[in-house]
Length: 414
Image (tube, rainbow, N blue to C red; front, side, top):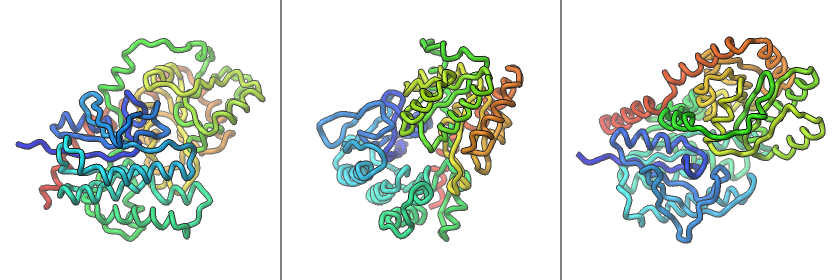
């Protein structure tokens, strides 16, 4: 019997060799175990990769742990301006031009277009049509709603109209919609669109990879864990993760003479601002360690007592939040402070920490002060509940089995 093939188009796809992000790499590894061929198409440059993927031709094929990647050559960019928009657009246009010319690849039965940005909707739909393959649309960020909520751009702007057209087009044409946003079907219904099929596919962990990382012995700077309680964060150092709120609460902790350390792993647009604030306020209880490899990051977080996750207040999050770090935090069996305002919050569902109001340093400090009075045994009990919840509900090993069954059902329902 011929093996089925799925092409995954994700502009920002990475893997454990080249850098973030890992969602589709993990999904691909599990789909391969389920008997499918998988090919991932990604951009040669994104701000999430460790380094630009450099080559001379228009595309390059590389295998990572037996998962084929096709890197599409795209221009570099800085920030969120026109150069980033150009990078996205070039990826979509080049892939549309090149996919017929890559003869080495197995022809797809399914084409999954993942939309950190919705231009790939066009790739997914037209490539699927060309090969008579099922078109699967994965929405992880709501565009254009994200832009409308987080910028000053108005609804009447031409780019907003284009993005809205692409999102609606995908909802109408996709044979299957996949999303880690648990309430996204509410958004689709609000758009007045009748969709064909939906599957909730949350961000999760790949047990094989995370256990391999955690079992390795690596050297880290243990001097940053000298306090009675250490609170850790890993991710983009910027407004999207409310990191400055955490730093403000660190100042309050120092002013209150609490023996608490704050470890920040990552880089981003607020890194310099936060670094300056730390120096000006002599915050020797805050450690900015910069961007680290996945392996180093996990080992640093493993040494922390409490982990911090946050998202700013926004109507966006009523449809769900797709933070990749939360299942990883939970698997590390740590008490988690979750400063978010969303439905179906994982930390609340698993009773593995506390959920508080976001973007409020005083509320955050008050919560930290409460945690400071708890003993390590009590904190560990919260952590155990979080880890057990992940093992029961949030591993790609089990989720991808459900995904494969859903793919099979698409053909059975023809």
